[in-house]
Structure formats: C-alpha cells, structure tokens
Length: 291
Image 1: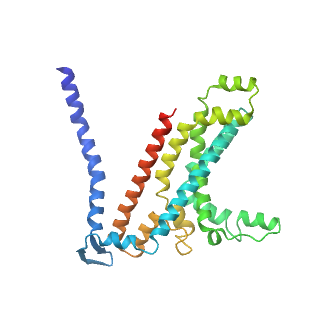
Image 2: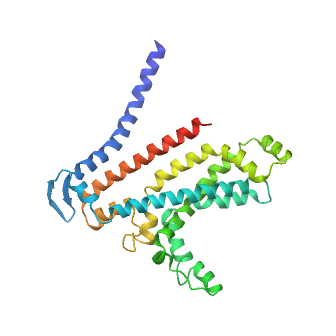
Image 3: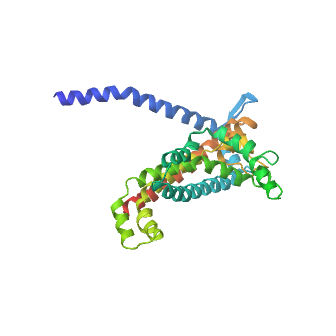
C-alpha cells in the first residue's frame, strides 16, 4: 500500500511539470497552425482573414523556395562530411600521447563555445575580408589576387564558417570515444605487423561507428536551423545564393511582414526536420544493430 501511495505521489508531483512542458510546446505550435491559415500582414493587422491552404501554396511557389531547400541540403550535407571526416582524422592524430596533448585538445574544442554571431563576424572581417583579412594578406604574399569570398563563393564560405564551429563538437565526441578503445587489441595488432591504415580501417572505424551516428544525428538537427551565420555574413545573398529554409522564413516574417506565409514556412521546415530525423534515427538504428 505504501508503495502504491508513493508512486501516486510521484505522479502527482510530476504532473505540473508535464502540464507546463505541454503548454510550452503546444501553444506556440497551435498559434503557428492558426496563423498559417490566415492572411495576416504586420503592416495591416486589422485586415486578417481566413485563407485556408493559400499560404502553403504561396510558400511552395515562392521563387526562392526550392533554392532554399537545395541550399539547406548542401549546407547540412557538406558540413556533416567535413566535420565527420575531419573529426575522425584529427581525433586519431591527437589520441596518441605527446607533449602538450591536453593543451592541443583544449584548443581544438574551444571554437565550439564561441557564439555563432561572433564566429561569423571573425570570419567575415578578420579572415575572409578581401582587403584587410588574413587570407587576403596570404594571397598577396604569394603574388595572387585576393578572393572576395562572400561575393564570389558565398555558400562555400558559409559552409566553412559553420563547419569550423561544429568540427570541435565532433572532435570532442570522437576523442572521448577513443578513450574507451581496447588498447591491448591495438597493441596486439601492431605486434603482429599490422600497419596504421589497417588498424584504422579494421579497429578504429568500427569502434567509432556509434559516435559517428550520434554526431550525424545531433549535428543534422541543429544545422537545419542555421541562421545567424547567414544573416551576419551574406544576408542570404548574393540574390538567394545562401538563402536556406530558416532564412526564407525570416524574410517572409520580418522583411515582407507576411506572418501567414512565414507560419506556413515554419511548418514546412518542421516537416522537413522530422523527415530527416526519422531517416537519421533509422540509419543510426541499423548502425547500432549491425554491431
């Protein structure tokens, strides 16, 4: 009886937190659903009206929509490849003991704690500036013409900035995973004459299968929402060359003041994120069950 009362008391104590969580999640979603069926422009707040699915049709037929979807896929895919491949290689390099190993690891991980806006400003003004940036100075040092990165290679530049931010996260996960690797198995392979490439292929990579799957899932979820880096560096341009889905929603809401179309775009972004999440969860599930 006492056990039953204790469980009942625990459920009663948890109910306020559950209700608060549901309200915190459902109310914004319900408002987004409501406004997605309304014509609501911030410039004319008194002229709202029910339009059904017209906002979705408008968003899907917007000239920059499919470009934004393609840019989102390219951004997410490119950053994932760079961070996973680079993270694995760098983690393997810093896994062996050497003087100053702790300092090197700390420096490799530290960029992850820099705010996206600050990181974007550093790359835009200090590194990729075509006049006074470090890369421009390096180009002139070798007699080359400096590149105007955010004008000539806008999407590539954004990918570099975002990858620089997320590479430390991958390194942190992979370095931590390598700490649990069986050292005796690796030493036995070395004693049997196995080369470093063979050890990496048959021991290290299989051991990092789960961490790689986790990094891909977590990064993909956050990379779908990249906004600050684009806003600070290119503002979605030139044209719509760096406009992704979140930035397109922003332009609808705070540039064109069309809350209805922005709400419809937000729901589309949620659907796209869930599709990718389901795909990644299944991919990770296969990866985990295969071991």
